[in-house]
Image (cartoon, rainbow, N blue to C red; front, side):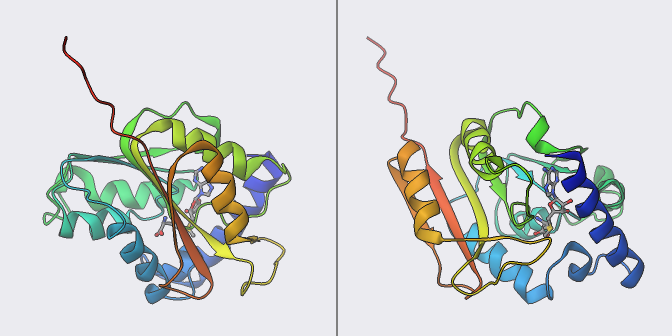
Length: 216
Ligand SMILES: C[S@@+](CC[C@H](N)C(=O)[O-])C[C@H]1O[C@@H](n2cnc3c(N)ncnc32)[C@H](O)[C@@H]1O
């Protein structure tokens, strides 16, 4: 991600951190908790997360971890976010299950720009809300989709704002869902478009073929 894009996103979240207390979904940029949880529901029902390692890109306060952990028995969960205060809060929240003893899964939170990282392979890679920021680099979204798809051993799930409904804004950008679907189809045979949970959003699911091991 371009340094200036990163700075703009940083300032956006810093302003919101001053405005709202605790782990309010508005700090993350959501209009409210319902907008956030509708997206989580679409993600959680898109595939079976049981016994899967999960990589969450742009994890915010780790709310998706909490959501999935209540429904599934995950193998492990790793969240990455470039906003340091979010990662600090999230690490405290889930540190050794100390402050939030109800989670079942071992979790790990990393500070940094995921688009600049070599991502370790995980069964399922997820990005909710983290690809909605405008980029100076025209190829940002396509290169991140490729990067995420490479890191996903089984399934990649991400959501984007829907250009049919969501007008362009200085910080946020929306996309034509059919164009994104077609782009993903170029790389993956099994792609689903989920667009029945919120007018302003859609979710893409890319499933990798199961590799058959022939032992002889
Ligand atoms: C709208 S918030 C959503 C947070 C979380 N996924 C949720 O749904 O609660 C998007 C998050 O993505 C993070 N983000 C965006 N681009 C990123 C990048 N390239 N690397 C790391 N974090 C990123 C932002 O810092 C922000 O915390």
